[in-house]
Length: 290
Image (cartoon, rainbow, N blue to C red):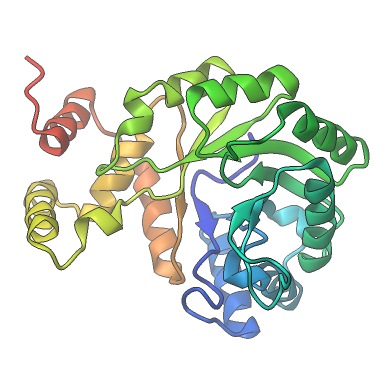
């Protein structure tokens, strides 16, 4: 993933699950992202009830941006009953070899491309067969359909188990100033030990901060007061907290506004001291480390 952008554009809210962008507006947003240095885009087959991949693929063509200018991440493994997936009664996981292969073929068609840069298993299934997933990865790699593989929300043990059967290069987890678990439970350490790039699919922790509850309002005020003292917004503080980590954590910004991506890229020029980072950590955890 060395050629991937430091900031990743999350497409989950671009379609029917969010902004409902038209093809032309989505194309304009892709162009704006690339112009600001965000060239890596994060998708999943299930986004928009299996419609957003196709809309994104059409928008890339309309934008005129060549395929070699961007990197595409997509995911599979979640089955969600909807018009695009008739015949299913409940949401569930499917990580079988057959499903992975069929999902990739559909994603390639949706995205109007011959290859996917990274395919990720979108959540660990309690009954996943690592050997069978690895077989699918081998087939896809040999066929040139997928370049690299990754996983989402895997525990440290699950990451280690997966690497015994096939090398993965990326892992996505919920990691932010409101959820430090991956930093403390061994997830990030396991990624470092195995040469895996960690990514945060919730880098701002918005659901825990900006909520109309007593706890949410108190948390927002606490973080806002500290961020303001340093001339930051809460979002900027949250991004800087992740950027400082030596693991090279890549934030996946799930937004439909171009300025949010540029703001994150511009933050890359800001260098924190370890003392500043630990001061943030102290405010986040309420713990004095002395």
